[in-house]
Amino acid sequence: MSSDDQYFLDILSNIPNDVKKYSDDIADAVERLFDSIAAPLKETSIVSAWRTRAIESTFQPKPPSPPPVPLGYYGWAQNWVSRNKALTAAIFAFVGTGSFLVYRRRKQYVRKRRAGRASNGARRDVVVIAGSPNEPITTSLSLDLERRGFIVFVVVRTLEEEQVVYSESRVDIRPLNLNVLDPSSSQSAIESFTKILSSPHHAFPGASPHHLNLAGVILIPDMIYPAGPIETITPDLWSDALNIKVLGTIATTQALLQTICDFKARLLFLTPNIIPSLSPPFHGVETSIIAALEGFTNTLSSELATMGINVCQLKLGTFDCGSVGGRSHLQSSNATGADVLTWPATTRASYAKNYFAQANSPGNRGAIGGVGVNIKGSPLRELHNSVFDALTVSRPRRVWHVGKGSLAYDLVGKWVPRGIVGWMLGVRKMPPSQVGTSPAMSVRTQSPDEQEEVSDASVEWERIERRAK
Image (cartoon, rainbow, N blue to C red):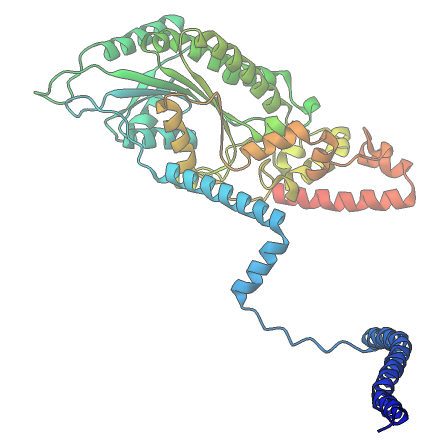
């Protein structure tokens, strides 16, 4: 083989390698071209698809939520408590505190209260009640204290009152003759009483002797007061009320004071509280006398406190005294329609309308005692328990509010403006043309409309006169 043939064969043998090389280069170049074109398209398609899904999710309505599962009472209460935590805490605090107070009050109300006994089982403690035996509250207290184990002495001034005490037919309810108007007789009665307390006492024949102890003295001033405008209350009524209710109470206290100090006994004053707290019109006598007694009680309490003797004031509300023959309240006995008819014509024209409006107003709830008002008061057991506690607890309170309305009216009188109190009691301002004018004069001087009002008032007075007769 010639050299030319060999050269030609070499060229032919290299052609496949060159074709493969050039074809690979072309394929790589085409692939890079397609990759450079496909990358932007791929990114654009991804962004477009995301935007499409976002748009579809924005405008596409949400699928309906599943219907709520009905909750029971427990679940409803749990949800309400979780939403109103502050209100729930306040309710629990109020209910818990109220329940505790009611429980404690109920426990104190039903617990047994009995006076102490001597070592031989006989009665030992003595209580003196200075009040009229004809008063329902005096009778009720004497019977209750005797039932609880006290020896009760009731202060009497006349033979009639002594017979009232003996009519109770109780061995341990005894009269104590103490006439403060006769100093010598009063002094001898106190000496005899002190001798009884100091001497050895035999409960029954053969019993071992023991000494009595004076537990306390209860003063109950007369609770019947005249009512009406001040100009209709004569000086004699003022004098009698001050002498009997104020000076009589002070004289009785002075007569028993030395015995009280010797035995370290307690001194209890029982006074009405509703009318003195409100100071309403037409009750000047009661308001003035209770204020004087409170001043005396406060001074006496300060003096006896230096000797370790407790003085307590029981401010009374209304009570149901039906079991002892009394009315439903222990407040003042108001004048009736017949009493109003005794007023002068000018006084009647000025005050009668407000007097009857106050007596019959529903705002006083029977506390001031109107015509035909029958509001049930607290049971007398509440008074009995308070008196017993004031006599026996180790640290008695200075002031006790006992009875329906005692504390409530006290707060009303201290914090509510007097104008609002008068409005609640039915008191209204009288027209100037009717003040201090008799009905006949007012008819001649008033307008036709006012004359018609006076005519209606005259009809009302005729009805009052018929009831009085």
